[in-house]
Figure 1 (cartoon, helix red, strand yellow):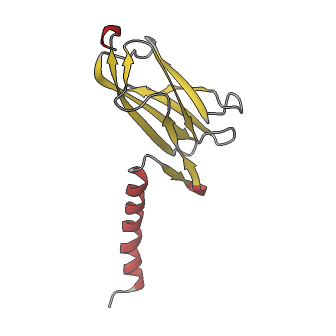
Figure 2 (figure 1 turned 180 degrees about the vertical axis):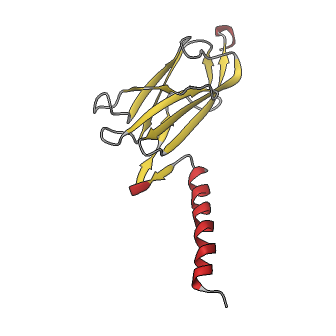
Figure 3 (figure 1 turned 90 degrees about the vertical axis):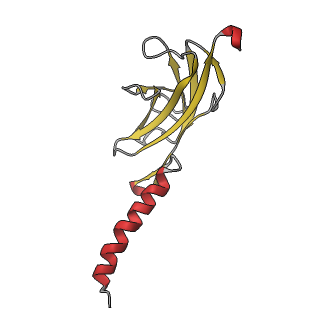
Length: 143
C-alpha cells in the first residue's frame, strides 16, 4: 500500500508542472494572489502586410496604475525589450492601453516576413506574459 506522503510527493510536482504548462500555452500567466496578466497587440494582426520602415503599434494589457507592471515591445527577439508608452486613461503608469514606434533607434520593419513583433507585460514579482504577431514588410509598390 502506498503511503499518503509518497502519494503527495508524486502528485504535487506533477500537478504543478501540468498547471505551469497549461498556463504558458495560452500566453497568459496568473501571478501570486491571482493577478491575471495579459498583453495584446491590437493595431495589427498576424500575417498583415505593413510598410517597410517606421511603424507604430498599439495594444492593451492588464497593467494599470498600482499593479507594479510595465509593458515592453521587441522586434524578432532583439534585445533589449523596449519600454512602450503608456496611453491608458490613468496616466503615465496606466499601460491598459499602450503604443510603441519601431524606428531606426531600435529597429525598422524590414522587407519580407521576418518581422516578429512582441508585446510583453512584466511585473515587479517577475511574472510575465507575451503576445506576438508576425507581419510582412512590403515596399509601397508591393502594397
